[in-house]
Length: 426
Image (cartoon, rainbow, N blue to C red; front, side, top):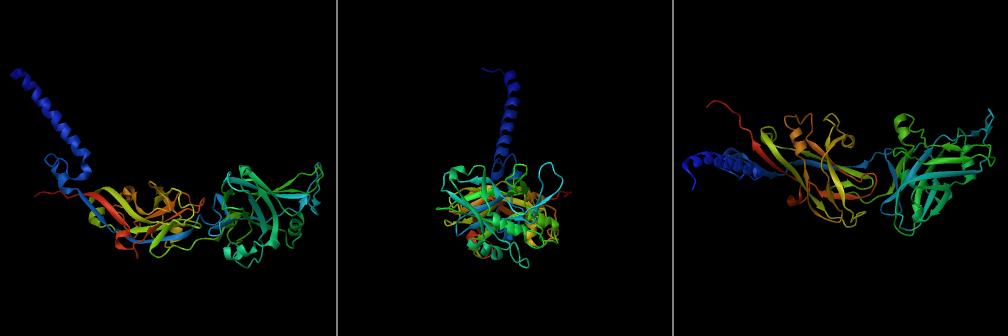
């Protein structure tokens, strides 16, 4: 039996332990709003939970990565997503030099011309792949990057060379020989020669090959042997574009670029798209009441979107991520295609497959807290959605829009917050 003195010493300790345990329990159940009403009544009374249609505008814009900024060129033989490549050699060397000489000799013939393609990724277990090179140069008064202009130039009469490669050899690089007579025609062209090459693949089954670009660090090159004479060095020519002449930086980027010769139909009006080829990025602008955004402590913010199942999409069974981004562009930029270039602070990605449908939740507490006390006229309360396979895959996902979708499918924002009451004397 405990003495009265012992109980006197133990009782305060027990009370302290019990109080500490209650406080911990309160913290652990903070978000529920119902924990520990006796110990933390203010939290239990003020914690609010609401879900509402906060997206006041949403849309998607295609054309990413921008033409010329690609790290890889996707080559496919899928008629629904026909992806090809363009490489420009707008300056062709017309002279060469023998070893131990100081005089240049005119290039009047060549022993061989080879184009080297560096493989970024390919299906090494698939069918043999035929690489086809075409002369796609033409009328310079037309848009020389437009698919409608360039795709018809992939014609049997303009073939420069082909090579069929077994799938298990698609691991490093591919060398495709170019017709030397056609190459010399380019060298002799009035006003200086140039060669613009279109690249396409063919195979007995659907397949895809990715090749590196200048932006990817390993651009396609031409290797020319002016002569079989061993005293003559080979000539190496890297991609180079002279157009548009009015924009030198853009001309540099257009040394090699992706050509989308056929793509799936645009998304219907009740959805916005993320990914695809050409890739789409989505733009969502929010309207959040000031009593929540500016006069409360926001504990959690979750964007809930409903994905529309698309079993016919490319790579429909593949799971990939959709990433929300905060935007760096202010309200002074009104062109959404430009706005969606300036992305910062990527949030957590959410994985999904195109063939599946259902709700997808994106945590965006960081963005919501950053909008606090900002002026929406200067800092749009908006985010972008981008596919993490953008530019390297035609993978895509469609989400129901706030514009015309059934109410239950529209984007909504789930927010947990604590109103902050202003203090003062009674």
